[in-house]
Length: 114
Image (cartoon, helix red, strand yellow):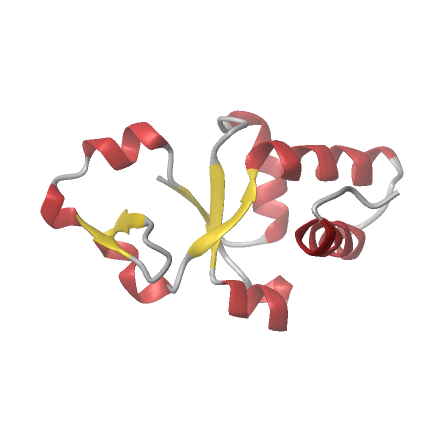
C-alpha cells in the first residue's frame, strides 16, 4: 500500500505504480475540495497478502484493508489514465488546477479533454 497526501505527491509517484491499478480516494472530498483529498494505491499483491480479518467489503463491494475502513475510499482513477493526464499537463506547462479539471472531465465523460 502507498499513501499520497496530496495531488502533487500522487503525480510524482505515478511512474512507480502498476499502470492498470486503481487509485482510491474519498470521492466526496475530491468533489468538494480536491486539494484536501488524499490517495491510496492498493496493488493486487498487497491485497492478497492480507488475512481475511484484515479486510472489509465497502458499500461498492470492493475489498479494502480494514485499517482504511474509516477513510470512505472508492475506486477513483486508473494509474494509466492519471499518468496520461499528468504527462499532458506537464508538457503544456500547466498547473495542478488544470490536472484537477482534466481528471474531472475524464470522470464525467470517460474521455480525455482536448
